[in-house]
Image (cartoon, rainbow, N blue to C red; front, side, top):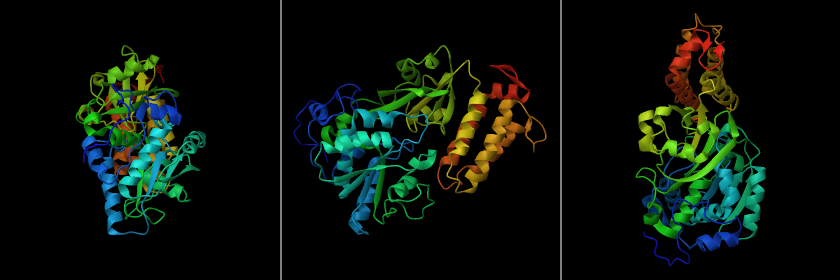
Length: 421
């Protein structure tokens, strides 16, 4: 399929696409983007050609999700499919979904309609926080859509609440915890119907493709990251001071840090960057020339994830920061599987001992601390009910590698940043 409907407005140019409208209201939205055309299943092909991937963290292609749900619907199921727009943003270092829902809620709602028409759904839900639900509700009051869209305030606010099965469970009135499912959501969600769960930015990108087509979508960005994406840049010690940028896919990390204008992101002071989110990967300052896409980050063992760059400057102890992150992530688990119940607290305890320069109670000596972190990280990898333990393991292992000299100093009871422990 190619988009052939007549455009009533000129497509946005440059990298201001998702955030191109002057305001959040419907008038500003339609002055910028025009009315949403009616689409059908053929739009899935256009979304595939545009290369729209998941922006919630996993990076899974949206077209493949749509195909899976639409295929199940064609084969027959327990009712029409449903769409859940994921605006939970449980990632502590991310602010992009909040900015999008505040500044461009109608683009998200358009994306929900596009996804629903593509898979034959007649109902959809926007799942988000109480504060953002009010903004979405005001936008819905301005519209008349062919899909019944409801807003659901999430009763659960843990780090893992935004995971697809947890979100679907919460929307259906469940506990909002990840499920180790044998049957995929695309086949049968908690409501018994095929369920599409997609991040709000991903859906907003689909709304742009439905209007302007894949060729336009790929007119900026890189081969592995076409179009634009929202990126949250913050000082790793101050997530509340984050800056959200809309940038062409594949922009160099250093360029994104500079554009944020954060003090910690000054290239002269940047020591390392946590890429993808708290459960992401530490990369050194030597990686600042790498592009923020799958291809550019692969040599560093990293991926864009939820579009997060958390910066560590040269005045902050990386081992202390890693210990605080590990403790927060251990406390944010759902507590439903062995890796979360036993593995993550153990990782957090050992990294805390390393940060404090003390021996672990069950360890023979300080040199065993780093080895113990790697041992437990290997035990939790791939064994959780969701990918939360994998992210913690990845983050702490990358810290041991990137901050090797700091680790050795802490093993000897010193801190390269703060002196003696």
